[in-house]
Length: 291
Length: 291
Image (cartoon, rainbow over all chains, first blue to last red; front, side, top):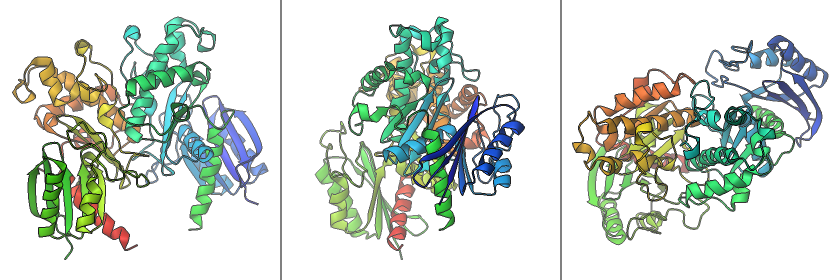
């Protein structure tokens, strides 16, 4: 009876899960992200108590996913205190002694949504504290020498937002600087969850997200773009983004099917996309090892 | 003795070529793009006189590259008079009766540069009358249900260029609307080739191209970004783009090696990237047919 493991690492918590051959979750545990030693110990303890055949890790980043690199499997230059240059992959793999797949949290989520929707070419964005994006094409991750960092791309400024300098410490007004959750409070003094839906700031945020969707459509020609994270979980946001997307794209290329089926929230509920993606990556590893 | 054929279709001319097993050009002919009937007849005549084993076509677009589509191999909604819905691939293939690969002109150019540089993950842009981009990763084209249309993505506006509305008939101020060659004349009344290099417009154009390069770096993480076309052939432009690229990226991710080796003009001279790419695509077809 095969058992797949999944780890989604985040700035505040790690989500650990065991799945069966159909990716049904058998056991799940969230542990807080504290020090690397303590947190990785928690990961190892969970999977020692619940043995698995292989494991998929989706991690916050930036991470090193270059198989030829001496720091493959590391969390690299993260600003998160204590977590820079942590050898996450090897420390888990050496103790558990099973095959381990390693990618970004958003790539893992894209992989999970690919499995859930059957769309082999799909892009997943999370828009919350930060913005991240991951793309799959024909069941493989897009990314040459490293993983995508789509959240830091540039888009054009909304005419009513030109005075806002953006909050990205690297780029100021890149996408993350303009449209991540904290940008709402930076503009208005009000946290996103408390900002009335009538506020014009929502349309400004939607304008940036819609451009991200247009650029993604033109760069990758995916079958589906999925939006996770707190900002797009606001019930009024998807329709704003869809409307502005259609206006901006202006029928230049055809999207596959209806807009409601193209720009969507996750098929997998409760932020579970990366967990299912982790199982699927774990399964793929075992499949490959028999080839 | 194997012979590969290559066709690069453009708005003003078709470039036809025969190559040997090492992609050395044995014969080359340029014919003007007139009507589809006449031009396709010219293609067929050339390859009847110079028989080939397989053919690679890189075409202006938009084109249909979806193998499951009933209009696979068509030039689809092009504004070029007479060329919309032309079944280019089948009309050539049926007469020549050899395997034919079909993609965009910029994808073919990316493929050629991949062969010439040995970089399996590479993005090629042409910046001339229009802007187009094509990406390869692990030797395959990036693109889900269709080909990339990177030239029509959005970037942020230069502060000294806010009054310019852009010249793209679909999007106004998308990249093509802001940075393609004709945008120079639209701003200044002077054609690009006659504009003094001291003009501040060059730095504005470079700012947009640099953002395109940053976004490409963050989306695809390629090993190399290659710029063809008339605008970047201006000797002073590459250094402007490189400088602004480094400023905008702000060390957020590492580029592979030196900037001079990362943002480059084509390795293949005389606009020949797509021709070599066509040969390589043609070779790949035969290789695959023996599998």
